[in-house]
Length: 397
Image (tube, rainbow, N blue to C red):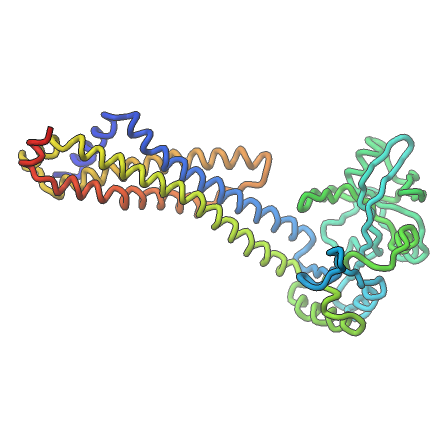
């Protein structure tokens, strides 16, 4: 039989039982839909985190208290031994190739007239902060100077969320506000920075580190940011930072991370997550394949006399095999196409509210899996149909 004739026969058989054909493909549709949607969530999460980390700058090195996986206090808190002096020592060591900005971070409430902004992240840092952190850009006014930092002048630079909540449309530059119980003069505001890992970077106020140390009674810093001139210097700078800190600290007292190492960790985790989610979805596709096999076996039983008649009229065993295999593949392919359309649509809708990114490889994977399911699970019923004896098939009631 010609291929066109086989395809026509297969399609006629499937359209003769439309409801059963649809229910058979439903398992494939759900499986493909789930693969694309779940893998898209994993890919979207990876892209989101990558963009957030890169927003700080690809040439940035982070120094944070404690060693990841290292010793902690009895309460489970990392013992912070990083000090302002450690940052000064690093700055002195890397003065020709890097900018260094230590950060003290505390939460506090801000007040201006009768308005209040609670839970604001107060960053005490140095005049180098805007040179070190790539996404810290002044929009209005100015940033504080080294002399203001050294003298502990009570000046503040506001993030966009604070600006909106306290000043609305009013120009904040020159206005005075309360940070806790201390009065600060606003000298500028930052451009919108967005959220990172659920943390609103715009709900922030930046003050000189000397002012923060006096206000909060702290000498330890929450992080030290080091921005080198180019990415090639990162290994050298990281080694110099380590040597400098080890003069008074142990390896359990700090962790040095780079944007690239953070991205590598994130990529590994999200890849495993995507594979796990895709594997879970593939199980439903496997169940759909079993459904295809069951329905096709039932179809072989129902059409036993038809098979016998066709063989008696000259149909070859290979023709019967191809027809039933084509029917199974058509069911899987049609289910795969519908699942792909629904999966892409759901991912695009989800992207408006969450992180979701449709990747071409997930589409090819899902479609290839659905075709493979049709071939593998359609083979047994097709072989069974092709082996039926024409005489016994014609006697079948």
